[in-house]
Amino acid sequence: MIRHAHLLFILAVTLASIMSKNLEAESFLGNGKANELFQAHCASCHGQQLEGGMAGSLLDDIWTTASTDEALSHAIKFGLDGTNMPSWKSVLSDDDIRTLVLLIREKAHLAKQANATAVDVESTFTSRHHSFDIETMVDAQGIIWAIDFLPDESLIYSQRNGSLWLYNKNGHVKIEGTPQVWHHDQGGLLDVAVHPEFTKNGWVYLSYAVKTGKNAEGKDTGTTAVVRGQITDNRWQQQEVIYLPEPSKHVNRGWHFGSRFAFKGPYLYFSIGDEGYKDTAQSLSHHSGKIHRIYDDGRIPEDNPFVGVPDAEPSVWTYGNRNPQGMTVNPFTNQLWSAEHGPRGGDELNLVLKANNYGWPVATFGMNYDGTSMKVPTHVDGVTAPVHQWTPSIAVSDITFYSGDKFPQWKGNLFAGSLAFQQLHRLEIKNDQVVNDEILLSGMGRIRDVTTGPDGYLYIAINDKVTSHYRVVALKPIANQ
Ligand code: HEC
Image (cartoon, rainbow, N blue to C red; front, side, top):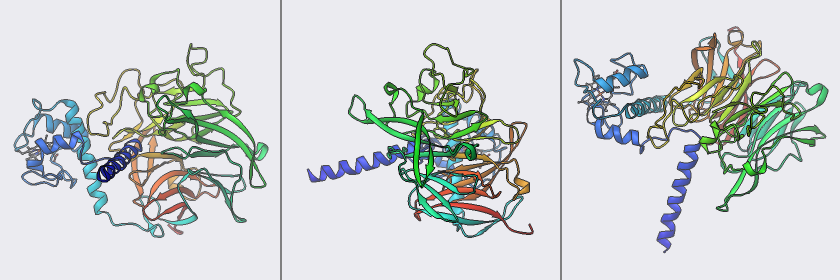
Protein backbone atom coordinates (compact mmCIF):
# COMPACT_ATOMS: atom_id res chain seq x y z
CA MET A 1 0.00 0.00 0.00
CA ILE A 2 2.64 2.44 1.07
CA ARG A 3 4.57 1.67 -2.04
CA HIS A 4 1.54 2.26 -4.20
CA ALA A 5 0.81 5.53 -2.55
CA HIS A 6 4.39 6.54 -3.11
CA LEU A 7 4.27 5.63 -6.80
CA LEU A 8 0.99 7.45 -7.23
CA PHE A 9 2.52 10.48 -5.60
CA ILE A 10 5.46 10.42 -7.99
CA LEU A 11 3.09 9.98 -10.90
CA ALA A 12 0.97 12.87 -9.73
CA VAL A 13 3.99 15.12 -9.31
CA THR A 14 5.32 14.15 -12.73
CA LEU A 15 1.96 14.77 -14.35
CA ALA A 16 1.61 18.06 -12.57
CA SER A 17 5.00 19.19 -13.76
CA ILE A 18 4.26 18.09 -17.32
CA MET A 19 0.93 19.91 -17.20
CA SER A 20 2.38 23.13 -15.94
CA LYS A 21 5.16 22.96 -18.50
CA ASN A 22 2.69 22.29 -21.28
CA LEU A 23 0.57 25.21 -20.44
CA GLU A 24 3.41 27.63 -19.89
CA ALA A 25 4.49 27.16 -23.49
CA GLU A 26 7.90 25.89 -22.58
CA SER A 27 9.83 23.54 -24.77
CA PHE A 28 9.05 20.03 -23.71
CA LEU A 29 11.50 17.67 -25.25
CA GLY A 30 12.52 14.08 -25.19
CA ASN A 31 9.47 11.87 -25.17
CA GLY A 32 7.14 13.33 -27.75
CA LYS A 33 5.96 11.93 -31.03
CA ALA A 34 8.45 14.02 -32.98
CA ASN A 35 11.30 12.50 -31.01
CA GLU A 36 9.93 8.99 -31.56
CA LEU A 37 9.86 9.60 -35.29
CA PHE A 38 13.38 10.90 -35.15
CA GLN A 39 14.67 7.91 -33.20
CA ALA A 40 12.88 5.48 -35.54
CA HIS A 41 13.96 6.97 -38.86
CA CYS A 42 16.79 9.43 -38.48
CA ALA A 43 18.95 8.68 -35.43
CA SER A 44 20.84 5.88 -37.17
CA CYS A 45 22.59 8.45 -39.36
CA HIS A 46 22.18 11.80 -37.51
CA GLY A 47 22.74 10.41 -33.97
CA GLN A 48 20.25 9.94 -31.13
CA GLN A 49 20.81 13.49 -29.90
CA LEU A 50 21.06 14.89 -33.47
CA GLU A 51 24.77 15.27 -32.82
CA GLY A 52 25.78 13.56 -36.06
CA GLY A 53 27.38 10.21 -36.88
CA MET A 54 27.14 8.74 -40.33
CA ALA A 55 25.57 12.00 -41.43
CA GLY A 56 26.21 15.53 -40.28
CA SER A 57 25.15 17.07 -36.99
CA LEU A 58 21.85 18.94 -37.07
CA LEU A 59 22.91 21.06 -34.10
CA ASP A 60 26.09 22.81 -35.24
CA ASP A 61 24.51 25.42 -37.50
CA ILE A 62 26.53 24.15 -40.46
CA TRP A 63 24.15 23.37 -43.29
CA THR A 64 24.23 21.76 -46.71
CA THR A 65 20.90 23.29 -47.66
CA ALA A 66 19.76 26.90 -47.40
CA SER A 67 18.77 25.97 -43.81
CA THR A 68 15.36 27.68 -43.90
CA ASP A 69 12.41 25.64 -42.60
CA GLU A 70 11.33 25.13 -46.22
CA ALA A 71 14.77 23.89 -47.25
CA LEU A 72 14.94 21.40 -44.36
CA SER A 73 11.41 20.14 -45.07
CA HIS A 74 12.29 19.76 -48.72
CA ALA A 75 15.47 17.81 -47.88
CA ILE A 76 13.52 15.46 -45.61
CA LYS A 77 10.69 14.96 -48.08
CA PHE A 78 12.71 14.50 -51.26
CA GLY A 79 16.17 13.56 -50.00
CA LEU A 80 19.38 15.26 -51.02
CA ASP A 81 20.95 14.38 -54.36
CA GLY A 82 24.53 13.32 -54.17
CA THR A 83 24.32 12.35 -50.47
CA ASN A 84 22.93 9.40 -48.54
CA MET A 85 19.97 11.45 -47.29
CA PRO A 86 16.97 9.42 -48.43
CA SER A 87 13.57 10.71 -49.48
CA TRP A 88 10.90 10.21 -46.80
CA LYS A 89 7.84 11.18 -48.77
CA SER A 90 6.39 7.66 -48.87
CA VAL A 91 7.02 7.12 -45.14
CA LEU A 92 6.25 10.43 -43.46
CA SER A 93 3.32 12.80 -43.87
CA ASP A 94 3.87 16.54 -44.35
CA ASP A 95 2.68 16.96 -40.74
CA ASP A 96 5.34 14.53 -39.51
CA ILE A 97 7.98 16.40 -41.48
CA ARG A 98 6.87 19.70 -39.99
CA THR A 99 7.18 18.38 -36.44
CA LEU A 100 10.65 16.98 -37.26
CA VAL A 101 11.82 20.39 -38.46
CA LEU A 102 10.48 21.87 -35.23
CA LEU A 103 12.32 19.22 -33.23
CA ILE A 104 15.56 20.05 -35.05
CA ARG A 105 15.09 23.75 -34.22
CA GLU A 106 14.36 23.05 -30.54
CA LYS A 107 17.34 20.74 -30.09
CA ALA A 108 19.64 23.16 -31.88
CA HIS A 109 18.53 25.94 -29.57
CA LEU A 110 19.12 23.83 -26.46
CA ALA A 111 22.57 22.82 -27.70
CA LYS A 112 23.44 26.46 -28.24
CA GLN A 113 22.14 27.39 -24.79
CA ALA A 114 24.12 24.56 -23.14
CA ASN A 115 27.31 25.86 -24.74
CA ALA A 116 26.72 29.44 -23.71
CA THR A 117 28.55 30.58 -20.61
CA ALA A 118 26.42 31.68 -17.68
CA VAL A 119 25.98 35.43 -17.45
CA ASP A 120 25.92 37.54 -14.37
CA VAL A 121 23.43 40.36 -14.12
CA GLU A 122 26.14 42.74 -12.97
CA SER A 123 28.26 42.33 -16.12
CA THR A 124 28.69 44.72 -19.01
CA PHE A 125 26.93 43.84 -22.22
CA THR A 126 27.70 44.70 -25.80
CA SER A 127 25.30 44.64 -28.70
CA ARG A 128 25.13 45.81 -32.28
CA HIS A 129 24.35 49.45 -31.46
CA HIS A 130 24.91 50.04 -27.75
CA SER A 131 26.95 48.72 -24.85
CA PHE A 132 25.15 48.79 -21.53
CA ASP A 133 25.24 47.93 -17.85
CA ILE A 134 22.46 46.46 -15.83
CA GLU A 135 21.49 48.08 -12.55
CA THR A 136 19.19 46.34 -10.08
CA MET A 137 16.41 48.61 -8.79
CA VAL A 138 14.38 46.11 -6.80
CA ASP A 139 15.17 42.62 -5.53
CA ALA A 140 11.84 41.09 -4.47
CA GLN A 141 10.55 37.88 -2.90
CA GLY A 142 8.50 36.00 -5.50
CA ILE A 143 7.53 36.45 -9.13
CA ILE A 144 7.15 39.97 -10.49
CA TRP A 145 4.45 40.03 -13.16
CA ALA A 146 4.28 43.63 -14.29
CA ILE A 147 5.96 47.02 -13.91
CA ASP A 148 4.91 50.58 -14.68
CA PHE A 149 5.78 54.12 -13.60
CA LEU A 150 3.86 57.00 -12.05
CA PRO A 151 4.45 60.51 -13.44
CA ASP A 152 6.66 61.28 -10.39
CA GLU A 153 8.94 58.39 -11.55
CA SER A 154 7.88 56.02 -8.74
CA LEU A 155 7.99 52.41 -9.89
CA ILE A 156 4.81 50.39 -9.33
CA TYR A 157 4.94 46.62 -9.69
CA SER A 158 2.69 43.60 -9.22
CA GLN A 159 3.66 40.20 -7.89
CA ARG A 160 1.77 37.09 -8.90
CA ASN A 161 1.23 36.19 -5.23
CA GLY A 162 -1.14 39.17 -5.01
CA SER A 163 0.98 42.01 -3.71
CA LEU A 164 1.33 45.44 -5.26
CA TRP A 165 4.36 47.62 -4.47
CA LEU A 166 5.51 51.19 -4.85
CA TYR A 167 9.19 51.97 -4.99
CA ASN A 168 10.80 55.42 -5.03
CA LYS A 169 13.50 57.41 -3.29
CA ASN A 170 11.43 57.55 -0.11
CA GLY A 171 11.34 53.77 0.17
CA HIS A 172 9.65 50.57 -0.82
CA VAL A 173 6.08 50.06 0.33
CA LYS A 174 3.46 47.39 -0.07
CA ILE A 175 0.03 48.75 -0.99
CA GLU A 176 -2.58 47.47 1.46
CA GLY A 177 -6.15 46.56 0.56
CA THR A 178 -5.60 45.30 -2.99
CA PRO A 179 -8.11 42.71 -4.26
CA GLN A 180 -8.01 39.09 -3.18
CA VAL A 181 -6.49 37.11 -6.10
CA TRP A 182 -6.56 33.43 -7.04
CA HIS A 183 -2.87 32.57 -6.78
CA HIS A 184 -2.95 29.18 -8.43
CA ASP A 185 -1.10 27.73 -11.46
CA GLN A 186 -0.73 30.68 -13.87
CA GLY A 187 -3.21 32.80 -11.93
CA GLY A 188 -2.62 35.60 -9.47
CA LEU A 189 -2.19 39.34 -9.63
CA LEU A 190 -1.28 40.05 -13.25
CA ASP A 191 -0.93 43.38 -15.04
CA VAL A 192 -0.69 46.83 -13.47
CA ALA A 193 -1.01 49.99 -15.57
CA VAL A 194 -1.06 53.66 -14.68
CA HIS A 195 -3.71 55.71 -16.51
CA PRO A 196 -2.06 58.06 -19.05
CA GLU A 197 -3.82 60.99 -17.30
CA PHE A 198 -2.96 59.81 -13.81
CA THR A 199 -1.99 63.33 -12.73
CA LYS A 200 -5.62 64.40 -13.28
CA ASN A 201 -7.49 61.28 -12.18
CA GLY A 202 -5.18 59.09 -10.05
CA TRP A 203 -6.39 55.81 -11.58
CA VAL A 204 -4.30 52.64 -11.53
CA TYR A 205 -5.57 49.49 -13.30
CA LEU A 206 -5.09 45.89 -12.21
CA SER A 207 -5.91 42.61 -13.90
CA TYR A 208 -5.98 39.40 -11.91
CA ALA A 209 -7.26 35.85 -11.66
CA VAL A 210 -10.26 35.48 -9.39
CA LYS A 211 -11.75 32.25 -8.03
CA THR A 212 -15.52 32.35 -8.21
CA GLY A 213 -16.88 28.81 -7.88
CA LYS A 214 -16.59 25.14 -8.72
CA ASN A 215 -17.38 23.18 -11.85
CA ALA A 216 -19.49 20.01 -12.13
CA GLU A 217 -16.50 17.90 -11.01
CA GLY A 218 -16.08 20.04 -7.92
CA LYS A 219 -12.88 21.70 -9.19
CA ASP A 220 -12.22 25.38 -8.48
CA THR A 221 -12.99 27.71 -11.36
CA GLY A 222 -12.55 31.40 -11.99
CA THR A 223 -11.83 34.04 -14.55
CA THR A 224 -9.86 37.21 -15.35
CA ALA A 225 -11.04 40.43 -13.69
CA VAL A 226 -10.11 44.05 -14.38
CA VAL A 227 -10.45 46.79 -11.74
CA ARG A 228 -9.18 50.29 -11.20
CA GLY A 229 -8.46 52.08 -7.95
CA GLN A 230 -6.53 54.94 -6.39
CA ILE A 231 -3.63 54.76 -4.00
CA THR A 232 -3.92 57.03 -0.99
CA ASP A 233 -1.76 56.65 2.13
CA ASN A 234 -0.32 53.44 0.67
CA ARG A 235 -3.81 51.93 0.50
CA TRP A 236 -5.82 50.73 -2.49
CA GLN A 237 -9.05 52.78 -2.38
CA GLN A 238 -12.11 53.77 -4.46
CA GLN A 239 -12.01 50.46 -6.34
CA GLU A 240 -14.28 50.08 -9.38
CA VAL A 241 -14.82 46.86 -11.32
CA ILE A 242 -14.11 47.68 -14.95
CA TYR A 243 -14.58 44.27 -16.52
CA LEU A 244 -15.81 40.89 -15.26
CA PRO A 245 -17.29 38.19 -17.52
CA GLU A 246 -20.77 36.96 -16.62
CA PRO A 247 -20.66 34.23 -13.91
CA SER A 248 -21.87 31.38 -16.17
CA LYS A 249 -18.66 31.83 -18.19
CA HIS A 250 -16.18 31.55 -15.31
CA VAL A 251 -14.66 28.30 -16.54
CA ASN A 252 -10.94 28.88 -16.05
CA ARG A 253 -9.17 26.12 -14.10
CA GLY A 254 -5.88 27.96 -13.77
CA TRP A 255 -4.45 28.69 -17.21
CA HIS A 256 -4.10 31.28 -19.94
CA PHE A 257 -5.68 34.23 -18.11
CA GLY A 258 -3.90 36.75 -20.39
CA SER A 259 -3.72 39.60 -19.55
CA ARG A 260 -2.05 42.82 -20.59
CA PHE A 261 -3.35 46.35 -20.79
CA ALA A 262 -2.79 49.06 -23.38
CA PHE A 263 -4.32 52.53 -23.33
CA LYS A 264 -5.08 54.32 -26.56
CA GLY A 265 -7.10 57.55 -26.57
CA PRO A 266 -10.18 57.04 -24.38
CA TYR A 267 -9.94 53.25 -24.73
CA LEU A 268 -8.51 50.48 -22.63
CA TYR A 269 -7.48 47.31 -24.46
CA PHE A 270 -6.82 44.09 -22.58
CA SER A 271 -6.25 40.46 -23.47
CA ILE A 272 -7.68 37.23 -22.11
CA GLY A 273 -6.17 33.89 -23.14
CA ASP A 274 -8.12 30.82 -24.21
CA GLU A 275 -8.29 29.73 -20.53
CA GLY A 276 -7.32 26.20 -21.55
CA TYR A 277 -10.34 25.74 -23.86
CA LYS A 278 -8.89 26.44 -27.27
CA ASP A 279 -12.11 26.31 -29.31
CA THR A 280 -13.66 29.22 -27.44
CA ALA A 281 -11.03 31.49 -29.03
CA GLN A 282 -13.06 31.27 -32.27
CA SER A 283 -16.42 31.89 -30.58
CA LEU A 284 -17.59 35.50 -30.40
CA SER A 285 -19.97 34.58 -27.59
CA HIS A 286 -17.13 33.85 -25.18
CA HIS A 287 -14.67 36.31 -23.67
CA SER A 288 -11.67 33.95 -23.79
CA GLY A 289 -9.05 33.93 -26.55
CA LYS A 290 -9.72 37.61 -27.31
CA ILE A 291 -8.41 41.13 -27.19
CA HIS A 292 -11.09 43.41 -25.73
CA ARG A 293 -11.69 47.12 -26.10
CA ILE A 294 -13.64 49.18 -23.58
CA TYR A 295 -13.66 52.79 -22.39
CA ASP A 296 -11.33 53.42 -19.49
CA ASP A 297 -14.37 53.41 -17.15
CA GLY A 298 -15.65 50.05 -18.44
CA ARG A 299 -18.38 51.22 -20.84
CA ILE A 300 -18.62 49.50 -24.23
CA PRO A 301 -17.79 51.70 -27.24
CA GLU A 302 -20.67 51.67 -29.71
CA ASP A 303 -18.30 51.26 -32.65
CA ASN A 304 -16.84 47.99 -31.36
CA PRO A 305 -17.02 45.50 -34.24
CA PHE A 306 -19.44 42.98 -32.71
CA VAL A 307 -21.85 45.31 -30.91
CA GLY A 308 -25.34 44.24 -31.93
CA VAL A 309 -24.23 40.86 -33.31
CA PRO A 310 -26.51 38.27 -31.65
CA ASP A 311 -24.78 36.41 -28.77
CA ALA A 312 -21.45 38.18 -29.37
CA GLU A 313 -19.56 39.69 -26.44
CA PRO A 314 -19.68 43.43 -27.19
CA SER A 315 -16.21 44.12 -25.77
CA VAL A 316 -14.47 41.87 -28.33
CA TRP A 317 -12.03 43.70 -30.59
CA THR A 318 -10.14 40.69 -32.07
CA TYR A 319 -10.46 36.91 -31.73
CA GLY A 320 -8.47 33.70 -32.29
CA ASN A 321 -5.82 34.84 -29.77
CA ARG A 322 -4.26 31.96 -27.81
CA ASN A 323 -2.74 33.70 -24.81
CA PRO A 324 -1.50 37.24 -25.40
CA GLN A 325 0.73 38.38 -22.54
CA GLY A 326 2.28 41.29 -24.38
CA MET A 327 0.51 44.39 -25.60
CA THR A 328 1.61 47.93 -26.40
CA VAL A 329 0.83 50.97 -28.50
CA ASN A 330 3.61 52.20 -30.75
CA PRO A 331 3.94 55.84 -29.62
CA PHE A 332 5.36 56.84 -33.02
CA THR A 333 2.56 55.36 -35.19
CA ASN A 334 -0.29 54.84 -32.68
CA GLN A 335 -0.66 51.21 -33.85
CA LEU A 336 -1.62 48.54 -31.31
CA TRP A 337 0.62 45.44 -31.16
CA SER A 338 0.39 42.22 -29.20
CA ALA A 339 2.52 39.16 -28.55
CA GLU A 340 1.03 35.78 -27.73
CA HIS A 341 2.21 32.37 -26.60
CA GLY A 342 1.93 29.68 -29.26
CA PRO A 343 1.56 25.99 -28.39
CA ARG A 344 4.89 24.15 -28.90
CA GLY A 345 6.26 26.54 -31.50
CA GLY A 346 4.47 29.41 -33.16
CA ASP A 347 4.74 32.27 -30.67
CA GLU A 348 3.31 35.30 -32.45
CA LEU A 349 3.82 39.02 -32.80
CA ASN A 350 0.63 40.57 -34.15
CA LEU A 351 -0.49 43.95 -35.38
CA VAL A 352 -3.87 44.24 -33.67
CA LEU A 353 -6.58 45.32 -36.13
CA LYS A 354 -10.29 45.71 -35.49
CA ALA A 355 -12.37 42.52 -35.91
CA ASN A 356 -9.45 40.44 -37.18
CA ASN A 357 -9.16 36.71 -36.51
CA TYR A 358 -5.65 35.69 -35.45
CA GLY A 359 -6.27 32.04 -36.12
CA TRP A 360 -6.05 30.08 -32.88
CA PRO A 361 -6.67 27.13 -33.02
CA VAL A 362 -7.46 26.80 -36.73
CA ALA A 363 -4.03 28.00 -37.93
CA THR A 364 -0.67 27.87 -36.13
CA PHE A 365 3.02 27.38 -36.73
CA GLY A 366 3.26 25.23 -33.61
CA MET A 367 2.65 21.59 -32.75
CA ASN A 368 1.08 19.86 -29.76
CA TYR A 369 3.21 19.60 -26.64
CA ASP A 370 3.42 15.84 -27.01
CA GLY A 371 5.17 16.31 -30.35
CA THR A 372 2.19 15.36 -32.47
CA SER A 373 1.06 17.64 -35.23
CA MET A 374 -1.83 20.03 -34.52
CA LYS A 375 -3.13 18.92 -37.94
CA VAL A 376 -3.91 22.50 -38.80
CA PRO A 377 -2.18 24.63 -41.42
CA THR A 378 0.06 27.60 -40.72
CA HIS A 379 -2.35 29.74 -42.68
CA VAL A 380 -6.01 29.68 -43.66
CA ASP A 381 -8.12 32.23 -45.52
CA GLY A 382 -9.70 34.86 -43.33
CA VAL A 383 -7.00 34.55 -40.69
CA THR A 384 -4.48 37.33 -40.13
CA ALA A 385 -0.94 36.00 -40.29
CA PRO A 386 1.46 37.03 -37.53
CA VAL A 387 3.92 39.79 -38.41
CA HIS A 388 6.59 37.58 -36.87
CA GLN A 389 6.63 34.12 -35.31
CA TRP A 390 9.09 32.31 -33.10
CA THR A 391 9.53 28.56 -33.59
CA PRO A 392 10.59 26.98 -31.32
CA SER A 393 8.65 29.03 -28.79
CA ILE A 394 10.64 31.59 -26.84
CA ALA A 395 7.49 31.91 -24.64
CA VAL A 396 7.11 35.57 -25.55
CA SER A 397 5.91 37.85 -22.78
CA ASP A 398 5.49 41.63 -22.72
CA ILE A 399 6.57 43.98 -25.52
CA THR A 400 7.31 47.70 -25.71
CA PHE A 401 8.51 50.23 -28.27
CA TYR A 402 11.53 51.99 -26.81
CA SER A 403 10.77 55.71 -26.71
CA GLY A 404 13.48 57.12 -24.45
CA ASP A 405 16.52 59.18 -25.39
CA LYS A 406 19.25 57.25 -23.55
CA PHE A 407 19.72 54.71 -26.38
CA PRO A 408 19.39 56.77 -29.59
CA GLN A 409 19.96 53.81 -31.92
CA TRP A 410 17.18 51.83 -30.27
CA LYS A 411 14.49 54.48 -30.61
CA GLY A 412 11.33 53.00 -32.12
CA ASN A 413 12.60 49.41 -31.84
CA LEU A 414 10.31 46.82 -30.29
CA PHE A 415 11.63 45.01 -27.21
CA ALA A 416 10.18 41.62 -26.30
CA GLY A 417 10.82 39.53 -23.19
CA SER A 418 10.83 35.74 -23.18
CA LEU A 419 10.07 33.33 -20.37
CA ALA A 420 11.24 29.85 -21.41
CA PHE A 421 14.25 31.05 -23.40
CA GLN A 422 15.03 33.81 -20.89
CA GLN A 423 15.86 36.30 -23.61
CA LEU A 424 15.44 39.98 -24.33
CA HIS A 425 14.81 40.57 -28.05
CA ARG A 426 15.25 43.83 -29.94
CA LEU A 427 13.21 43.88 -33.13
CA GLU A 428 13.59 46.41 -35.92
CA ILE A 429 10.32 46.90 -37.75
CA LYS A 430 10.00 48.48 -41.18
CA ASN A 431 6.69 48.72 -43.05
CA ASP A 432 5.10 46.47 -40.44
CA GLN A 433 7.67 43.71 -41.08
CA VAL A 434 10.40 42.55 -38.72
CA VAL A 435 13.69 43.14 -40.50
CA ASN A 436 16.03 42.27 -37.63
CA ASP A 437 15.71 40.27 -34.40
CA GLU A 438 18.70 40.73 -32.08
CA ILE A 439 18.98 38.86 -28.77
CA LEU A 440 20.39 41.27 -26.17
CA LEU A 441 20.22 39.13 -23.03
CA SER A 442 19.99 35.42 -22.49
CA GLY A 443 19.91 33.00 -19.58
CA MET A 444 19.48 35.44 -16.70
CA GLY A 445 15.92 34.48 -15.81
CA ARG A 446 12.43 34.70 -17.24
CA ILE A 447 11.72 38.17 -18.60
CA ARG A 448 8.09 38.98 -17.85
CA ASP A 449 7.81 42.68 -18.50
CA VAL A 450 9.68 45.41 -20.35
CA THR A 451 9.03 49.16 -20.50
CA THR A 452 10.71 52.50 -21.16
CA GLY A 453 11.18 54.38 -17.89
CA PRO A 454 10.35 58.09 -17.55
CA ASP A 455 14.11 58.68 -17.21
CA GLY A 456 14.70 57.10 -20.65
CA TYR A 457 16.32 53.86 -19.45
CA LEU A 458 14.91 50.50 -20.46
CA TYR A 459 13.40 48.56 -17.53
CA ILE A 460 12.74 44.83 -17.36
CA ALA A 461 11.35 42.41 -14.76
CA ILE A 462 13.48 39.24 -14.51
CA ASN A 463 12.43 36.22 -12.46
CA ASP A 464 15.18 33.68 -11.87
CA LYS A 465 13.78 30.73 -9.95
CA VAL A 466 17.16 29.02 -9.81
CA THR A 467 18.87 31.79 -7.86
CA SER A 468 15.61 33.04 -6.26
CA HIS A 469 16.22 36.52 -7.62
CA TYR A 470 13.11 38.36 -8.67
CA ARG A 471 14.19 41.75 -9.87
CA VAL A 472 13.40 44.92 -11.69
CA VAL A 473 16.53 46.09 -13.47
CA ALA A 474 17.44 49.07 -15.64
CA LEU A 475 19.57 48.87 -18.78
CA LYS A 476 21.86 51.90 -18.81
CA PRO A 477 24.15 52.82 -21.71
CA ILE A 478 27.86 52.91 -21.07
CA ALA A 479 29.02 56.51 -21.48
CA ASN A 480 30.99 57.67 -24.53
CA GLN A 481 29.74 54.81 -26.61
C1 HEC B 1 20.99 6.90 -44.35
C2 HEC B 1 21.40 8.00 -43.53
C3 HEC B 1 20.38 9.11 -43.23
C4 HEC B 1 19.16 8.96 -42.68
C5 HEC B 1 18.47 7.69 -42.20
C6 HEC B 1 18.63 10.31 -42.57
N1 HEC B 1 19.51 11.20 -43.05
FE1 HEC B 1 19.25 13.21 -43.13
N2 HEC B 1 20.98 13.42 -44.13
C7 HEC B 1 21.86 12.41 -44.41
C8 HEC B 1 22.98 12.95 -45.12
C9 HEC B 1 24.19 12.16 -45.57
C10 HEC B 1 22.73 14.32 -45.29
C11 HEC B 1 23.61 15.31 -46.06
C12 HEC B 1 24.24 16.37 -45.22
C13 HEC B 1 24.87 15.89 -43.96
O1 HEC B 1 25.69 14.97 -43.95
O2 HEC B 1 24.47 16.42 -42.92
C14 HEC B 1 21.47 14.57 -44.66
C15 HEC B 1 20.87 15.82 -44.59
C16 HEC B 1 19.76 16.10 -43.87
C17 HEC B 1 19.20 17.40 -43.71
C18 HEC B 1 19.73 18.67 -44.31
C19 HEC B 1 20.76 19.23 -43.39
C20 HEC B 1 21.55 20.36 -43.98
O3 HEC B 1 22.74 20.39 -43.69
O4 HEC B 1 21.00 21.22 -44.67
C21 HEC B 1 18.14 17.28 -42.87
C22 HEC B 1 17.25 18.40 -42.36
C23 HEC B 1 18.01 15.90 -42.53
N3 HEC B 1 19.01 15.21 -43.16
C24 HEC B 1 17.05 15.40 -41.71
C25 HEC B 1 16.82 14.03 -41.59
C26 HEC B 1 15.65 13.50 -40.94
C27 HEC B 1 14.57 14.33 -40.22
C28 HEC B 1 15.74 12.17 -41.05
C29 HEC B 1 14.72 11.16 -40.58
C30 HEC B 1 13.38 11.28 -41.10
C31 HEC B 1 16.96 11.87 -41.76
N4 HEC B 1 17.57 13.03 -42.07
C32 HEC B 1 17.39 10.61 -42.01
C33 HEC B 1 21.71 11.09 -44.07
C34 HEC B 1 20.59 10.53 -43.48
